Image (cartoon, rainbow, N blue to C red):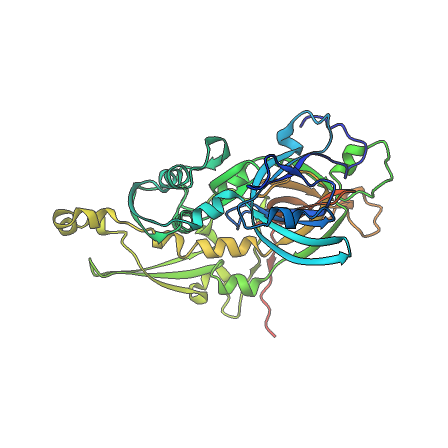
Length: 441
């Protein structure tokens, strides 16, 4: 990573913060009247969004008469000397779609909040897709982004190739709903049902967790005491100012969602086929893990079985068409039906379990503002042990340290500082797996 030039970890430079309105010939600078700017992104939300609080003493709201046709242009960097804008800077335009909380603060000033979102969200809400597509789901996703949402090439991030050729009929959905519909049904080349559709700073992504997990961490964050090593500003720039462990594990929720074991019962009314198959911990996720060992527990129940041998923890009853292509009668009499294969046997028993397991181990951290921290990328967390211990090998907390994926970020900017609030999660740990002895109470 290139060296950053700054003197304080929370400093920033506003190059542009302006509203473009149909009632103004040029964008109106609002950098002197904003009180707080929040920008959000998440791997669980399709578009970036945010809000800005204005303390208006110039009658801006009266002059512009906000009606949702305005744009907010943002260009912010950590400093004028930052060598790589992609690393720490943000330059993006949003569509303002709502004004709320308008009230007077004194006789000459009023405050209000403007809410904004990526233009693609509003454009998507104005149309519907009712079309048949044939091909791999990643090509269909690319087609929707380019032909329906008109997303420029430089705003398309990672589009990962998917498994299998499908004849998919999008059932009257908006383009963004259609992308989410595809993500829920898509299976990666290693048969993992873990695709996501989201926008981060680098564009729109249609990608699996497996692919995201394989990307090296963008940097390491540390839990070192702040303002002690005054000559090490880089260490402070990547230093966690505050953190909270939202959840560490929930074996009851994972059991109910079928992560350890579940049974899929599929039926096909065309071929009159019924199939039962057990899934679970050992075949839910065949791709990369962030750390050495998956977040599981190994313990036998009163029957002497571990959780992975209890398929009735969750039973999924769902239509499926896996064997249609191999039936001679279907191929001879209805070729289109033989091609309409929906991989319910792949994504129904796996997707929910994978995503819920990721949500079991979550942490929220606060860092000095950094636009390189964006959803979908991986951080390495070096968590200092808070226990008093002279053993140098015990200086780091292994229960917290490790690789985490950035689930969501909130960049909070006010005239004095820029901070990044980051929700991170992991599906695995570097702790050793230890088998618990059978106990009964």
